[in-house]
Image (cartoon, rainbow, N blue to C red; front, top):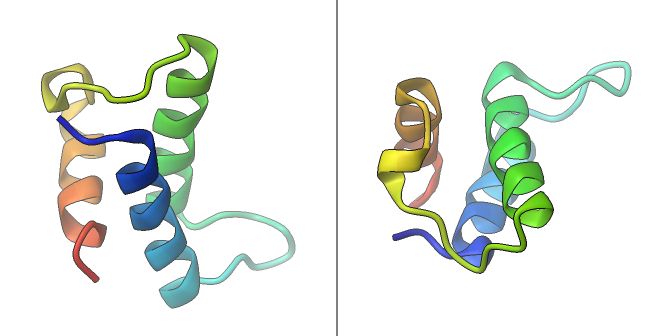
Length: 66
């Protein structure tokens, strides 16, 4: 189960590799930002991968270890 900090690190990795253009996040960063937003809204310290959409799971796995 990814923790908030792990998802945030994946987002940071993504933004470093795919910086914003005209203040717009890349598609991957937007997906991870949505997960972060949901975790904040629901006050979750961690979220089961099963609760990510399939595209969010793929993006998280792509950026978690970069």
